[in-house]
Structure formats: structure tokens, C-alpha cells
Length: 469
Image (cartoon, rainbow, N blue to C red; front, side, top):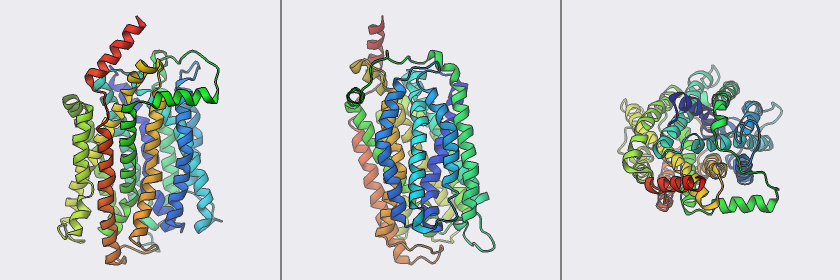
């Protein structure tokens, strides 16, 4: 059973991923589009192209991570190699050259997006591959994953609240803090420093576990055909396709939510940056609630059933504030009840989404033994590569969905809250509500085809134990 220190050290490594995701999900679109003047569809296109590069790099890094031979084991060489380069790349993403303006920044954004995605792949996939190696216990994996997801949200929320309350603040000439271009550079400096700290702590704190982790398979001649043949064999698993499809739809849904978050809070509900910081901070309570109840509900109901129940609740809760506003059933802007009601609904819906994510990642970990029984190989890296790819789709397909909604709504650029036409605001909500519902529903449909439960997992462990004896 993993100790609390192991869970904390390993979990803290996800702060880096949370910081990166928060920046891409919440600030990147509005920074490059509204502040720097890049057309919103071009921002979405840059991230989608970077995502296409990931489609190739992720499974390859997962495969090579599974088969790496070194005195530091299979995972840690990759993790250490990514720390310094991604620190610099993330900083420069938020400090573009002064000589480029508007759509001239598209190539710059594209190159840095691809670079950051590749470096996150080098770190995150091997790090995630440690989950089924640290413990093979069905319930302890959910607990370990819960710490990891909790710290991911903690990192993202902390940097978002700090940015909104300290960096992206109004000035004498800028009324809305989100339009403060200089504040984004300061944000990038602090965010990149936090990424460096998080990744370093995780790699160093798990380094002592290397002698106890799974050994790589014997060295064998490498060829393109062999590599992709083994990847294909590993991923031809019905339960994998179920969890992959679930994660893909979830990534698009949460990416859509993240990409439009400031549009709804800033333009739709007209919250101030201080109020938006408070809403973001409430995510800490959501993450804590998910950390507490997710292992319990998973232990009681089993992972698949727990995920379906929590997913249905999240599907209904996420678009509720906008849906109620469209029908005139939500407090109007300026009403003293608007903020507390929105806060309460945000805590509930966010905790449900986090719990869904925790359970899903734990289900991925259980694929390791199921695959090993069938293929005679440990392929944790390949499985987490495939699902990490879908998580990264949050910044690609999710933001593309967000820009599509903005385009369909004919949402104006360069305007301040309060100046957006009412019909544009109505269209924004009217396109968003059915979109988020349909996308999230797709994830639940995929989840129905997942077949591994507590009993089948125990049987897989018994089969592997018998084969080694």
C-alpha cells in the first residue's frame, strides 16, 4: 500500500499539468485573440495542429517509456529530460516578441504550442505510467489517482486565482484586467516557475521507488513495423476503446467549458475579476470534496458504476446556470444573489467533473494487467499515452469547439463587458447548452462498454501470479 508521503510527492507532480492546462484552457484564447488580436479561429487552428503532432508523439513516447533500459528505470529519464526545456517554453508563450502583432503571431503560437505539447508528453506519460507500478490494488489506485488529480486542480486553480487577483488587474488606462497585456508576461514567469518546482519534486520524490518498479522487457531489435505492431496489439482492447472514447468526449466537453469560461463569467454574467477569482478559488473546495468522496463511492459501487452515476450528474449540472438564465429563471446581473448562487452551482458541478476524471484515470490503470494477460507485456505507458492524448485534446478540439460557438454566436471582438449586444449573448448560451450536453452524453455512452471490474481485476492478478510461479 502506498504511503501518504508517496501519494503526496507523486500527486504534487500533477501541479505542473494543472498549471499548463489552466493556461491553455482559460487564458490562452482570450490572450491571443482579444488582447493580441489574433483571429479566434486561427488560435484554435494552431492548437489543433499541435494536437495532430501529439497523435504521433504520444504513443511513441509511451512505447519507448515502456521499453527504456537505464539505471534510473523506465520512466525517470524521460521525466528529468523535460523539466528545464518546458519551463522556458511555457514562459516564452506568454511573452511574445514585441515586433509581431495580430495574425503575425500565428506561427509563433503554433511552434510554441507544439513544443510545449511534446515536452509535456515526455514528462506526463512516463509519470502517469507509474500509477499501476506503484500499486496493483484496485481501490488504492483510485486513492493514488485522486491525490494526483487533486493536485492538478490545485495547481491550476492557484495560478488562476493569483493571476486574476494579482497580475491581470485593471490599470489607469485598462478598465478590465483581462485586457492587461503586461500582466500575462508576469503570469508566465510565475507559472513556469511553478511547473519547474512541481516536476522536480515529483521526479525526485519517486526516485527512491525505482528499484521496486516493474522492469522493462528484454532488449529486442527495434523496427518501425515492430513498434507500431506492438502498439496496435496493446490498444486492440475493448475496454481501452471504451475508456479512450469516454476520455475524448470528456476532454472536448471540459475544453469547451474552459475556453468559454471567461466569456460567460465576464460578458454573460458580468462578474468583476475579483469575483471571477473567487469563483476560480471555489474549485479548491470542489477538488477537496472529490478527493474525499471519490475513493469511497468507487469502493462502494465499483469504478464503472460510480463513473456513470457521477457523469450523469455532471452532465446535468454543468450547463444549468446558462440554461436557467436563457429561460429567465436565474438571478439577473447585479442581483446580490447572483454570485452566491453561481458559486454554489460551480462547486457542485466542478466536484462532479473532478470525481469523474479521478475514476476514469483509475480505470485506465487497471488496463495494465488486463493487457499483460493477453500480450505478455507491461504497456502502462502506451495506455496512458493514448488517454493523455485525449486530455490534451482539451486545448485542441475543446478550444476549437469554443471558437466555433463564438463564431456561430457572432460574438464581437474588442468589446468590454456590458457592451455586447443582448442577442449575441443569447446566441452564446443557446449554442453552448446543447453542445455541452450532447458532448458529455457521448462520454457516458462510451463508458458502457468498459468491462473490467473488481472481480476481473483480481482474476488478472491471480493469472499473472500463477504465470510467474
